[in-house]
Image (cartoon, rainbow, N blue to C red):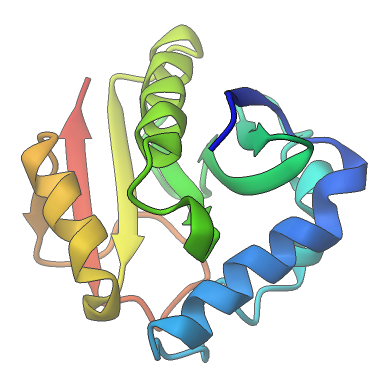
Length: 161
């Protein structure tokens, strides 16, 4: 893989990122109801991440998008807590370091934006990612935090920064 560049999302990325996200759900046979798969904001990520105290980072190599990961002030979360969102990679990019670069950039951004905790939601179908989150200091919670609107997720995790 050529050199990976991490940059903020741009409007021109919207369609390709939505495809990467939805394709991951299909590849892992993950439920689509009540998840980002059905969320209409998935088609307009550049607009969504225009919100204050939010950022979506995109990984790109050789002019091709590899995936994305963001920090978002989800409604209902404490002011000091943001949600790690839209962390998806294309199949060709998995296991090659792009995800780690995106993840680290998001945690740096969360700190720079004034957050002291990061929350995330996931599904058992993404067990490799969940295992990675645990190794990186996230702990499982018994119930969701905030109001992400993704009632289909049943794994909730939190990390202190």
